[in-house]
Length: 111
Image 1 (spheres, rainbow, N blue to C red):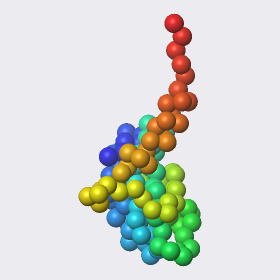
Image 2: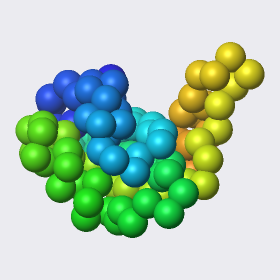
Image 3: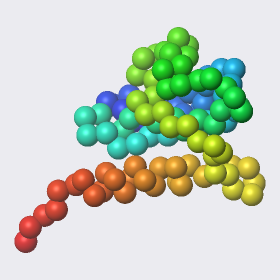
Image 4: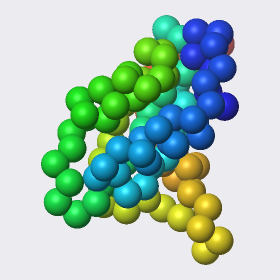
C-alpha cells in the first residue's frame, strides 16, 4: 500500500489498469519517498516490443480510469522487470535506488 498525503493507494489497482493498455507487457507500481506527500506513486513499465508508448500515454491512461491522485508521478520504462523464481516481482530491487537517494538527501545531525 502507498500512503500519499494521508490517502491509501493500492498498487494492484493501478497495475491492473495499466495491464489493460495495449502495449504494456508488465508493470510494477510502488511508493517512493516524496518530501511533500510522504510517498508518491511510481510505475516501472515493461512494454511489448515495438509498442510506441511514452510517459504521457501511461499517465493519461491511468487518469482516464482512476482518480488523479493515483496517476504515477514517476514512470520508468524497463526492458524486463526483475522476478523471483516463483514469478513474483522483486519490487525491493526497483525501490532500492529511490530509498538510497532519499537517504542520501536527508540532513545529517551534529553532536
